[in-house]
Length: 293
Image 1 (tube, rainbow, N blue to C red):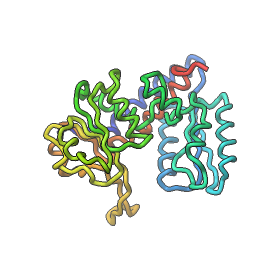
Image 2 (tube, rainbow, N blue to C red):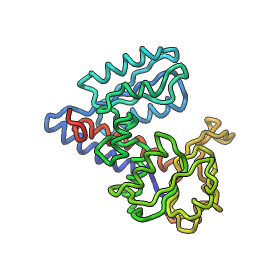
Image 3 (cartoon, one colour):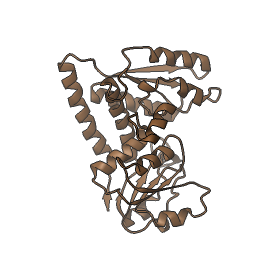
Image 4 (cartoon, helix red, strand yellow):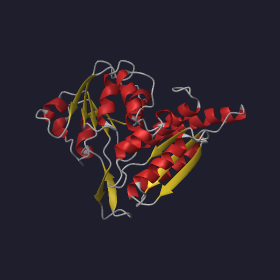
């Protein structure tokens, strides 16, 4: 069994990005600028945005954090986004989800300039990705693809089961694993209502678990020699932790790991690669690699 170390891989990629940014600055080009909008005071979102700011520093990016109160109106948030759309110094930006319940998330996403949508969640980027056209790819799926490539894990022709059908992970992940230039796999998407879920998993060469249920994938669902990618990050109570909780994956790691050829841990697997992918997209935005205007 080989542990897929997302933390180490992300650190190496950020060093590569930093070296390229240093070259750009030395050549008189603009420093990449990533902005983040945080509405309210959700603990998980606070931590995630903090990690993004730290990653920007390591990559040599300029970063801006825009904090808005919990009671910010939808129109006030949309005005903020329009300002970022029109700011020539901002190469890319993200609006941290989830948003307060009184704000329509999809309306907010639709207003983001798809050319600055480094989270890859705007319908234009989602549609272009489904068609295999150049675009900003959703950060978590891009991170997973990067891990598979860096560890030289064969995916072409393999049976891949994606557990989960969210717009941020499940659907784009299935699309990437299906496409010839990325996974080139035979893909099945399962969810909590799939009648043959366990049978599908037992037949899979690669399982990507993004169903949001702690310890959902058990040893009896995994065949010997499988590759298991755990996207789950559920907070569960833990009296032994200083914070009173720990992050728990969708995979029951201790019993599943011995059967795997490769497996990601939680934490330290997919999580660091999500932020790393955001940095890759921001650099691409600064270089105008995907959208030239």
